[in-house]
Length: 238
Image (cartoon, rainbow, N blue to C red; front, side, top):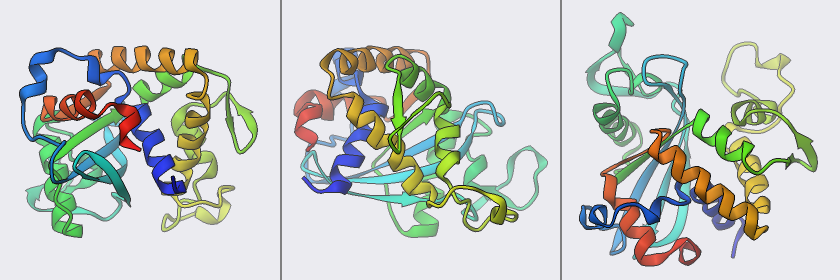
C-alpha cells in the first residue's frame, strides 16, 4: 500500500472509527457510498473559535466502489461562497472558515458549495470532526509520538507545531516547516502507529463512538458512512 493511502486511512480511522456500529436503521439512508465513484468532504473545525466552530482544514476523499483511491488537501483560506453573504455582519461573501456559523446542517452544505465553486470538486457526503473530539480520542490512547518524540500537546497544537503557516503574515517567525496538509499527516501517522496495538485501537474506536454521540463527529447524510463501513469494514478501505 502506498504512503498516501496509509495516511488517509489513518485519518478515516480517527474520524470514523466506531461509527459503523451505529443503529442499523441508518444503514439504509442515501447516498450509497459502496457503489460507483463517490467523493467525501472531510472538515476539521476548531469547535470554540466562533459560532459552531471555524473550519481550518479539509480533505476531499475519493472512493471507487467503496474502496479508497486518493485524497486532496483543501486549504480554506481565501475560499468564499459564490452567493451567500458573510454571517455575523462580517461583510462580503461567506468564507469557508465561517461556513458553520448559522448551523451545522446548512453549514456543511455551504462547505460543499464553497469547495465546488472554488475547486470544481463535488462531494456526495460530508464529515465534520471537531478538535475537541479528536483530542478526546488522542487522550484515550496516549502517549503519542510526533516525529519520534512524545507529545503532550492537543491535536491543534501538534499540527501548529509543524505548520509553516504559508501565506499568512508574520510566518517568518514560525518554527514549523511543513504545509498544513503535511502537518495533519504527521498526526495521522502517529495515530496509525497507535492502532497497531489492538487494545488501544479498540479504545480509540469506543472513544470515537462516544464522540460521535456527543456531537463532536458529524455526518451528512447521517447514514452514508455507516453503510459504507458496515458493508466494507474499516480494514477493507485499504
